[in-house]
Image (cartoon, rainbow, N blue to C red):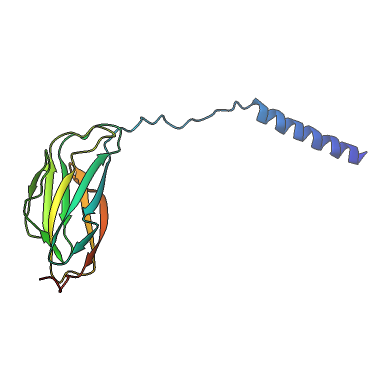
Length: 171
């Protein structure tokens, strides 16, 4: 009989615990609603021409800045390019519609455009002429930065450029 009493008591205690839990209302807490973020996001790409630069000759880099964000850029876009060893800026001066460039040194180019770039669109390409030194290394890695407003380091792009030696057999 004592066993029955304990067994019954345990069942009643278990039923009371289940009933107590069932009586407590369940409240679900949802995370606060997040507003959809809308901002411009710049991606910079750089290529070069000709395919292989030659020591003592000239070449050019072509820079494209694209807004992959959800809204237009609000103002100035800045591109900064520090040329690697063996390359320097050449004439004619870097050109493109809508870009204004300054050259604080033969190795540094800073260009700005005030024209807004729509979401999914690109700024006009920027062409940068370079002079290849006669003793330039066989490979040059040219890295460029682009950003909008205070975010000048917003995106970077590196272009690996092969450089062939000067042909000493030319007349």
